Image 1 (cartoon, rainbow over the protein chains, first blue to last red):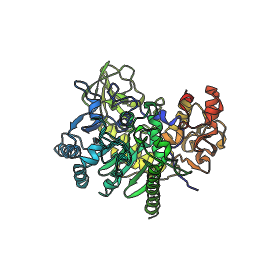
Image 2: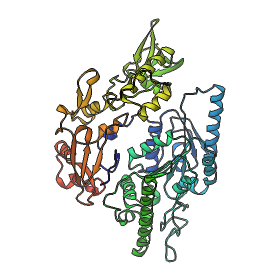
Image 3: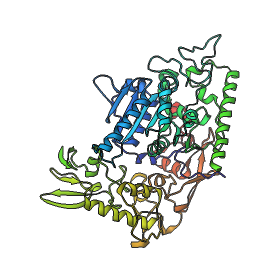
Image 4: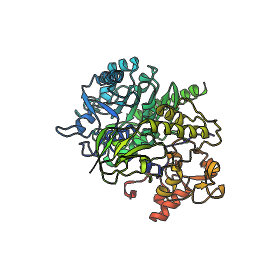
Length: 321
Length: 243
């Protein structure tokens, strides 16, 4: 018998969602595509973070859609920086706040959250060394990587976070190619290897879970990292009205398992008592996986199962200690 | 728009808004325990005390239910407020013991030591959020207060399992000190605090548990949908099934 305290997600909790705050800090009128998962996630994260937040935004989808000149969707201080140095700028912001506190220009007890939003390209490919540096220096900020698994705003070029077998414009599927030929980079393990207090994966399809993780990350005593799965209807070739469902399918099939690493302790946050869902449920609704043969799917399934089993093992191993 | 001053900062607030709302939007921190947007203000925890100066007089009020008025001057962190807040929080900790949430708040408010004897006879801080969310949001009225003074507690009627409770878990979700446990195992959901055990409904397509029987009955009564839709989880519903 598995006893889990407070299973916040995984069931249809119709009323708990109504207790979420009504205030908006990532406001409407932005130019995201229909059914954008990342914009939804941003909104939920900002709801949890509140008004005392400074947002550092790397170049990417969310920067493009939220700040078309002369408008902005941000009701909080926001700075746009280049692809590669978002984490470095966040370190600077944090250091500046520290100095201003010392000089008495900002009250000691005023809590200021610093959140970095970077896409998967800006995190896994271009910005990874700045991120690694900032994490190792121990600046207190939250890095959110919204992962839509390719460079979406420039036209679906493959990144190192693109999953195996996905067809993108730089890794097109055809007679000689299966699409992306290598596996998705495991950002969570990379960031967790810096021994930072809190690392988690989340998905806006599970809003309360996402917000809970953001709260934990902001309360952590050091840098924290959240890897947010963001469904991209434009790039993946999925119907925009199925965004939420595809996010849930990704979590249930094990393609993107939801877990957190709190001070080195692994914990799977989504209970799957019946095991993983068949992986075809997730793959068959997407245009980018349309070309996959049965053998290819078998390869992906084995890998996903292996990863999931490893996570379970890690959970058992670290929780027992 | 109403012009008010909070901590020397000039703020224009919306008419009918509370002082707490206006302060939060301006980024001024006021500690709260019993406040949530989903329910009406109740002013039970008294943590959000502020000093309001009007017509040359100052008084202590709870900011969560005090509407803004033209020209009032609000102070959120004077010595008087700090002293009162500390006493209130110390009394709460004396009642519940040092739970992590209260400890965090104590750090923020500046409580260094508790001057009262910590009795720790109940974990509940009696903020009434679970009762209010059950009344106003869920509409089930399944729990309420019982007793007075030290014996006051939140219970279902007669402290036995009742039919009104949907086992929806909204009370566990909203509890500011996380003391309402909710367990799921072997196809049942259990809320030990309310002595509630409820069977979970499995989706007819994928076999995943997704709601309690009471929730399904409630949705059926409200919408009159057929079983083919009600017993299929939201992920498995086809396009034409969505309402």
